[in-house]
Amino acid sequence: AQSVTQPDIHITVSEGASLELRCNYSYGATPYLFWYVQSPGQGLQLLLKYFSGDTLVQGIKGFEAEFKRSQSSFNLRKPSVHWSDAAEYFCAVGSYNNNDMRFGAGTRLTVKP
Amino acid sequence: GAVVSQHPSRVICKSGTSVKIECRSLDFQATTMFWYRQFPKQSLMLMATSNEGSKATYEQGVEKDKFLINHASLTLSTLTVTSAHPEDSSFYICSAIAGGLAEQYFGPGTRLTVT
Image (cartoon, rainbow over all chains, first blue to last red; front, side, top):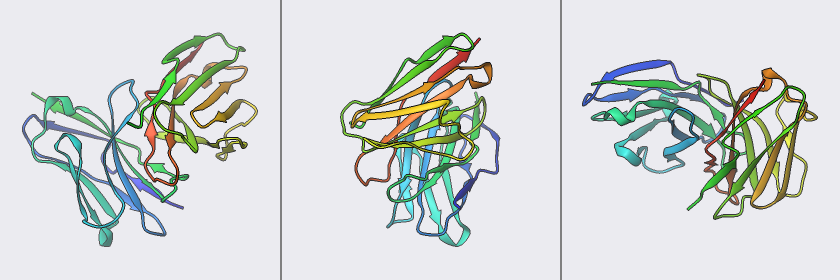
């Protein structure tokens, strides 16, 4: 069965600092990988996704993620964090028809001024 | 494009009553819709998958008689929480996919409080 692990429950970074959120997955076939962001009391917004091709994926709001098959990882990065990036971030893995998407536990990002 | 709405955004109901939550795909036809439940500071847990015109498929441990799902059209799915109890209080989020595409589009969520 597929699963996603986000090792960091909570991360605090200073505004302007770089950010990396970790995500490891377990999936038997070619994974479809996603990063979503959720602000308090809101739904999920897709930041980026990986289906195939270039393993470095660019997303919205200046985020990028790199798929590393050998490490079963799909870490999210941003070179310079803004205060508005404070939110909950979820990594997810699914299949092509995505009727079995699984989410990680989430990482809460706090941004210090 | 690919907007999913939910109504209501917040609902408070008394224990023992039923409440219906609507999920609509506004600008695309959703062949499949999903219902998730999210407890405070936790991840999303898939409750059920619904395909238009057929019965929903429930995840293990989810009571299908308590959480009634109807997907009557390609743009509307409803979740009815029957005989609600305080432990049903949660944030319910729906999502939808169009055709065979892998990306799910999420609604803004519904906060249910059962008193």
